[in-house]
Length: 92
Image: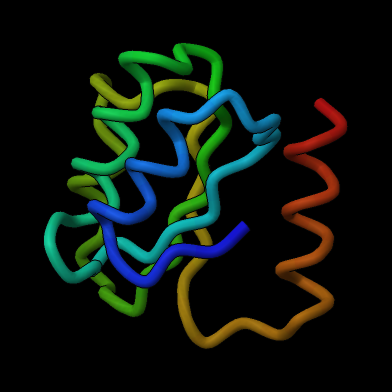
């Protein structure tokens, strides 16, 4: 499934659709990726999240308040690395 911005993504996450992993950029129009994940956790507490960021100072997203099911990948990355991260997260 795909969404064009944070609010659209949240609407998808609030449906009954099976979603194994949320892959989101940290910087989104409408709300940031962390806000999206926090709000999604209200209805999907076990949701795994892979944040994508191009910011070197992304450590603020890796705080104690983050779920252990949340991981981050920084740009640039190759598709093999992305697919390995996704496979590892979905299978764990």
